[in-house]
Length: 267
Image 1 (cartoon, rainbow, N blue to C red):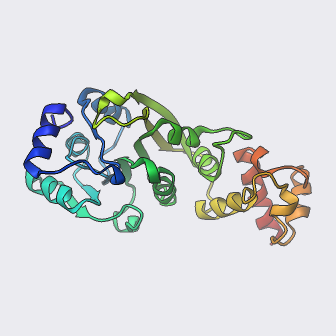
Image 2 (cartoon, rainbow, N blue to C red; image 1 turned 90 degrees about the vertical axis):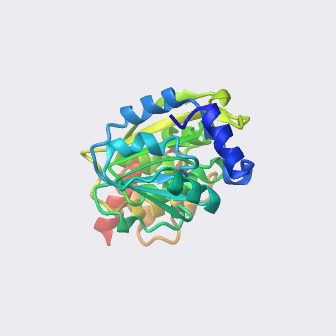
């Protein structure tokens, strides 16, 4: 198993590579915990996109779950190592940025799993969710993970919280303390699992994103201020029973969806 301290240290030495903290290179060394999380994702054989495979600790657990794993690695040396050390017809390793990946080329349905760099967790998660994978599993900093489940009025509540809760069922599969990584980060981590809801809205997720961002543009401002540029915006608020003096951060995901649908009816 690659997700263990001996393999990681040996591989890094062979590569003459020092973990790049700027790229979020903290390698998981708790293979048993990682394996439990992959099993809990209930992957069903569809193509998998893996974000940030690193030395392949997660990759080797994903390969038995699918005939196609596309691993996206930003570090060219790491990508070359993974491709050479794990020759497998099911695996394609691509050097690139997950924020620029064309997910439409993967085919549908598909799943996305990855150890997301802490500093761009939200940006990557939003890009992934816009493609509506059937399953999304991610190992993230605990505080970043809290954003997915945040409730109205919470500081972490935002567009990511709203669309995730509208389109997905999600849960924290397991906690990962600092000791699960090499080098050990100064943060706690969580492995999250999300499954697309059978009753997910049919409305385009990118348009829901856009509306929520508009409503939360200035968090301390009222919806009356944030919806000024949207035709019939204030009238629509009254139609769904929301006061224009309300702050966007107090609306539930269901109220945001109702607002979007009402605005569409108006147009």
